[in-house]
Image (tube, rainbow, N blue to C red; front, side, top):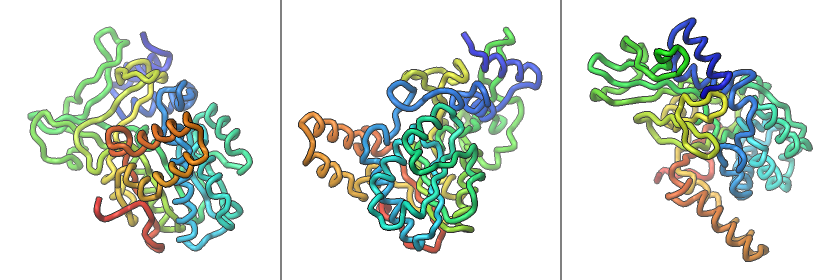
Length: 356
């Protein structure tokens, strides 16, 4: 059983030939009318995934403190563009701004910009953040010039990736084509060696690899912006310090699904290659470090204890569970990584250490 978008993709392939997995992801997630991130409410218990801000207010509060400190570090510019990429329901930013309302001059200086393509989520964000008069953008490069503080939590993992497999003839790209029935989407290797081979490592036959061009391009744009206008960016996502293998996965209704199954109704994401992002920025980068280490260095345990002092027994149990989910290595603590990128003109940020 397919979808309207699946039929459109099949028609495109029938007319023009197989497409890359990156092109398939771009259509499945970003099609103007039928793409998953254009029309669904993917975040929360009713969606396909739950992000860290939805788990506990502590996450957004600490991110807010980090951003406010970075604003002070760059000289308290006014105005400063506070930019969130993929703000979800607006939970992270609402918690961040609530936690920083006592930082003198910060709220008066900030201009809030939300990079979001999903109309239902924009409505949720307006309800959460309308008092701060946010301006919405389809793309990061639409944010006006000037000093910026950028936060991207679980954003880069949804950007398209290409996949490759090492054969006896060399690296070949995995493509999306059609089965013999002319309707069913299938994966197959391109017949020739890929021109991307020069970017791929020396590897044995059977090895696999991913390249996230869209993520690298966005990281480069962020780095260029910060070096030119000043500011900092904080990227939090699940991934690894250096690329290896393939990781693209599909989720629908909190359950694993086939990558090509029901395009437009299925979430697709891939682990983020943080080394590639850091290199692409061409700007001073700190990390990646584990999310658990980052949050602990910012004081999440102390914040949890503070919240528990005025909480009921039920609430204290919930706070402990949320803390464990965010920092425990067996949960989000190690899989999620944190990378900071700066302008090269201000002090090193909190939360990072040469020891990790």
